[in-house]
Image (cartoon, rainbow, N blue to C red; front, side, top):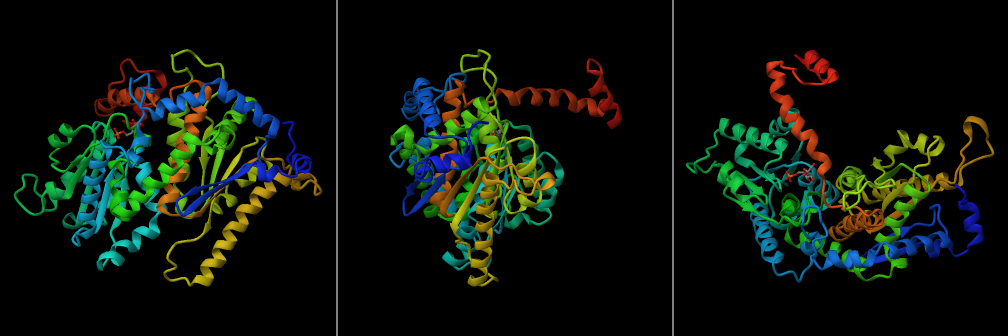
Length: 510
Ligand code: F6P
């Protein structure tokens, strides 16, 4: 690794200014400091030339023009349309599910929302509801004088432990189930939904409209497959379109639980924040285009410096699910080894994306980040001003907590870069370890929307540079098919035709 951060700062007094930028998101902003990365202006120049050679701008424009850039599935890629206030096809559907969300918010009988979905039908809403919890916990009580806030539960895993732990806390009469599945065929979601319905009926519910405690009132679906939802017995269904990829679907009715949590106005602000980032991505020159700068850096680290992973460290407990959300977004989109024409690639693609909220990560894996043998770029994501309701802690304590949080984020980034070589031996920190620092001025629906859109576009940029189709996910199929074959064998014990290891495991289970 030839570039030395300390020397690069000394050689370029404007390095911080050059490698940092702020983007306005309505009344708010997102600031990003790239200066602690292993690049300089010369490297940046060659990366931008690479983007131009890959036809990045034309490909970006093709996405915004709804061309079928998801070529392997012959589909357009339209999540950006979902946050475009001018889109005439999308708006009426948005209005409909937001109206429904408001009805549920105003219904004092509903105290628990259970979202049943997996992958993109779970990670986005689960991440965003937690991120905006300061808007969630108090919104219903504050806006309509309700006695208690709604609780939000997300059930994704086929492990019955998850559903059972949630159902234990709920009562059918005060629960709304949202069955969220683009295809309405995903095995985990279908089994969880069927078990939830059985629990509902076993506890006094009906499925034929014969009582107030009926599935028609307590179950709704979000899907592109409305006939399957109807066959399941659900009459309230919110649709979306096949041109919305699962991991890009939080902006559609898949965000219904978020819409119920934060309400119509805030959900529209969430879309507006993402739209502001879309406009930035669409119009800013490549050198000042933040998703482009981040995407190019990802490609540089993966292919030029051969770094294999990237650590996401949100210094905000509200953003604690960001690493999980990004794992799907980045690794399902760009974890490919053939190009968009099916030809084997000669370069490496998606790094392993992983992480955990700070300061917790400092007491777990930061040891390796500082002194391990691998260089792992770290992405700090912080919030400048806390907006959460202080509840039982006073504002002076809140300020103290927040200062400690930010001080730790800055200190970790500083330690990674500067190291500490005087001590020697076991106490030696080599330093020169790269990091990016992203800072929201406040965590609001707008800035959260913009942050997610920033990551979506960054993934698009690296996908274009690698020449892959970031919008299909054939790699998830094989395991699903094999699980269908294995499941009956767990009962019958039949191991015929199986490999020796799977046969051994089957025997160990039987
Ligand atoms: O894991 C594969 C996948 O198809 C994801 O892309 C998707 O988000 C998830 O399954 C859930 O799919 P669905 O919304 O159709 O249930």
